[in-house]
Amino acid sequence: MKRFLVACATSLALLSSPTSLTAADTYTQTKYPIVLVHGLLGFDALGPVQYFYGVPAELRRSGATVYTASVSQSNSTELRGEQLLKELQTLKARYGHTKFNLVGHSHGGNTIRYVAGISPSLVASVTTVGTPHQGSKTADGLQGITNWTGTTGLVAGVVNGLSSVIAFLSGSSANPQNALASLQSLSTRGAQDFNRRFSQGAPTTSCGQGPELASNGVRYYSMGGTSVLTNVLDVSDGFLGAASLFFGFEQNDGLVGRCSSRWGKVLRDDYNWNHVDEINHVFGLRSIFSSDPITVYRAQANRLKNLGL
Image: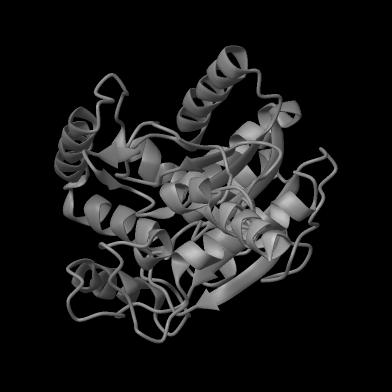
């Protein structure tokens, strides 16, 4: 009887111990930190609202070290890339990180490709989400319309003003803004010039895939969506619906064509997401039939973890 009571007491003690039976969740615990990079008119956070809505917290919950970059809301790929490079160098000096897993949405994808091309020793992997690697027909259309109507300067001024407001609210008002440089980078002609200089991970065929492991030692991945109007309550759907008209019958997410989103190993290019759903905004509103973006980001982190990255 005494032994039975001792066994029961031991079992209760083990069950009450917070570290006894519950293993730590390490699903997203990558070797190298994950850095999330925003796109055009983006931000790291506006108060409690993050650009990658809910993503950093969920990645951290399962063991990942996560940073969110703060680069110009609108400017050229090269300038944004130099800003990001400085941030990574600062993180390396401050915390001793040797490499980073870069994740970029929209223009953020081009931005991280620049850093991987300029300084591959700092980059373990590149994952682009809804990035116009071949340029955006929306950017081409806006260039054509503003040139034809003579409103280029006016529109650029409005976008620069909006960019400055977002920068101020997100605590990055020192970042320079240049809407015309951003538009040029995102156009088909600008993308072609950029791809010529930074070809690592490029698809080997039209609308195909590129190498997962590029010659610079960096792993490249991409994903994107092909839906536009996904939730009647999402205020961004109307804008994306109008922007999608530039694509005609080509599958797109409202701002980026399906084939244009492909770079390196294509994880999936036809999620039931529009361009804003890809970052889990607006506040998680999307089609009830779509994949959960947070789950997808977690799965990619787990993939990198299993590769020793």
